[in-house]
Amino acid sequence: MATMPDHDDKARKRPVKGLLRRLLSRRDGAAAIEFTILSLPFFAIVFASVETFIAFSAEQLLANATDVMARKIRTGEITYNLGKSTDMDEKQFRAAFCKEIAILMPCSADEITTPSKLYLDVRTFAKFSDIPTSIPRVSTAQYADLDPSSFRFAPGGKKTINIVRAYYRWNIVTDLVRPYITNIRPADGSKQTYLMVSTAVIQNEDYP
Image 1 (cartoon, rainbow, N blue to C red):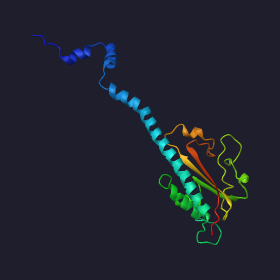
Image 2: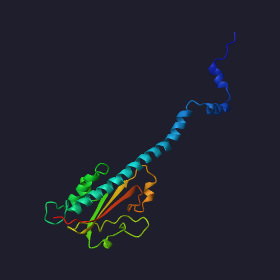
Image 3: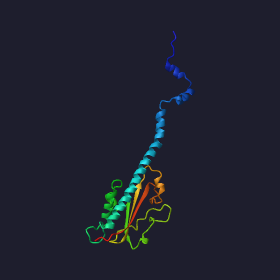
Image 4: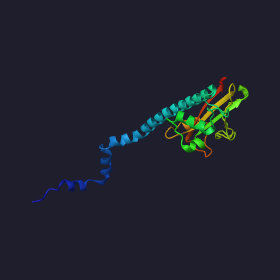
């Protein structure tokens, strides 16, 4: 009595040329593959949106810190080289400024003494027209880096005109647009930082 070929025997005898057609017709893992392909750009957009929001908040925080510290200089709460208990040197001023932005831009101990991200320029001028209006650069090249060589901490006393400028290098992770909207870039050619700028011009009060 002849035996009937089992299912495996039939499968082995199927034409090889139909294997690819059967493979393409299967839909078992299609949803998972489609989700994987679509999730990459989706999450990139989500993370970039979140980072943009955080960067915008950091810019507002930097501007607020600049205004707060400028107001303290204007009212005499912070003075420089006047022989008062309110006197601060550059390191103390940087530490106080860092406290104002610590929630999003914490400063390390090294950052307070040796700027690498946060740059502060606090100076007095004889008249408002002497105040610089442009960002100092190391050269005239289109993407020349920030030049902090002229930055000082030397605010004047009462009734003097002063400028408080703050610059911060914000590290970029997923935001692909932000590095291209600044014309200040690190000397090594990296575009992975965004230079935040905040300025306050004040005339000190006639404090005691």
